[in-house]
Image (cartoon, rainbow, N blue to C red):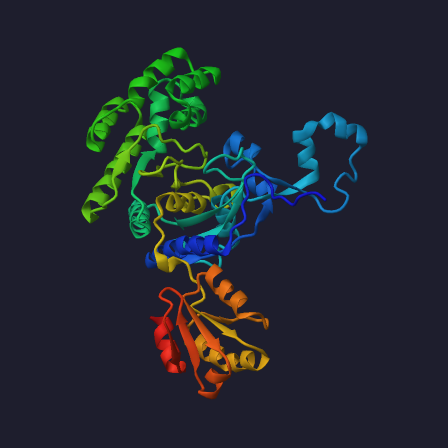
Length: 453
């Protein structure tokens, strides 16, 4: 018999692991709500026409496509199947795909529901996404994103509040991070001043890999994409700008003087840093000119968050997009958002062992018994405890006491209520503290007080 397995890049989660994941989700949700964001959900599948062309060529290749229902080859000449090639054939036999992120589906949602929502519209969304990527540490094919976006407002106050959300979430989780910031207009300006304005996408896709592949490989990729040797040479000092954020912005003002777009980006960055200074963001903020975020839809500020104590990719990222809803027939709606990578945050918290003890919600008390009459005696006690918010369960089978106590041990249940004839006669239970071994005869009120402890 074939051993059961799951697809590479996906994971099962045990009850303990789910308790930890829910701690992350609950922490993030509570901060989102604090800033006035409301939850929505969208389908796992979207029409490929919604998804294709929004993430660049590399993103399109990573879309999981879903075969049409029924005979998906019906109406296609067998000779044509052989001649089409896999990419063009896919367009004939797949109309749907699994969502790659939550931002493009959100843009589609806004356009479809424009008459039901109030602008500026602030939403958060916590759902899985899928990418046909090569699985590796911190990179999965199925993973959760926790997105927060506001659309229908150009104000940079929104960027400030997203930075505040990042600051607060990671403060609550106890993870030390650095927020890296850049601006797509600055990158456009750089492409202009080095004489390669038409190759902005090629340049951003390449320099976005700087951390992963190093400068030499980035330069090789730029040359392979047709960026001139002179332009690559002009780019080097810009990528190496040092000093404080203020120093870098001053240098950029000088370098990008010939580019109106570039200067607009510098101005936006100056405003964001000034706003952050006015509210006292505790998390370090760094202007990083190599930050490009390869997604084509960003048009303004872009963000990325790195954990300082663990070697892992970015754990949060996002930015401003002005044109996303336009492709769905609703032009002129600007938006900005960020996405928390729950799976990477989970890995970071595991490596640093930062979960509070209260994050795992165990059963507080298990009722164990010597037989059927004793088991029935437990049921009203269980009902009363649960009605008062106490996690409680009864061992369902009439089994040996050793087996029932082993069950409590294996599930780390802190209290056991033992029920025999003596306890029933006294209308009490023998309550045992599993950590100390102490036990006492106790009534319902005493049990409630002790196990809630």
